[in-house]
Image (cartoon, rainbow, N blue to C red; front, side, top):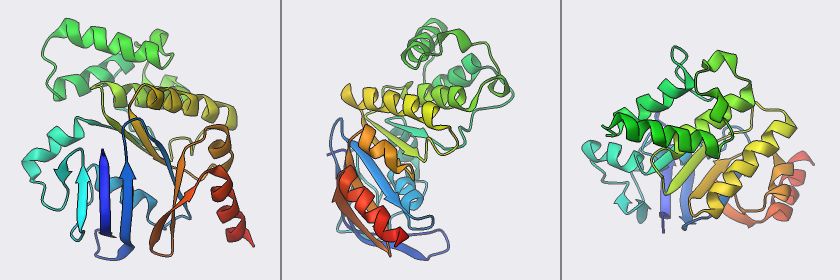
Length: 236
């Protein structure tokens, strides 16, 4: 298992408990949604996966074989090199081109050879349909294009797992579908994808395993049909 949580308690940085007794497993190539209202704990859970937020209490909390209750700070960079992270607001470096954004990440993660960096950047840009944008600055790109670059950045180091927090939240429906097609293709090639979303229609178009955060609990609702039923109950 890439992620294996058993009876894990998740607290915010102020100590407030947002989720209790979390049981959560993710295997190779899984496509997983996490749904729930704003403030229900979705982002907090995702942050524990890449150690932006600590897990202090759990019967088991492993990510890529690392015990997240006891991981040492010096071991966190090695863990994160195996995880691609995609944010709602893209978080591209505004003062450099697409190529230099991606090169910066490769240099920071140990790619020393210039030609190898160039080749890998060309590969990921082609994979996300952005080969002609390498010299563009982030502000010259549309929201969907920036998110495609963010996904290219996430897959640079051949991650075993991608974590995405509301990756279509700022995008129009057509652009969101294109981004979801990218994620689905990535998972079909063996990289697990775990994402939070409010976009219920996408769950039906791109099926996956669906979990829900609600009232301090975290539980599986199965598929899109179960998720839509839960969302309708919220609106009653």
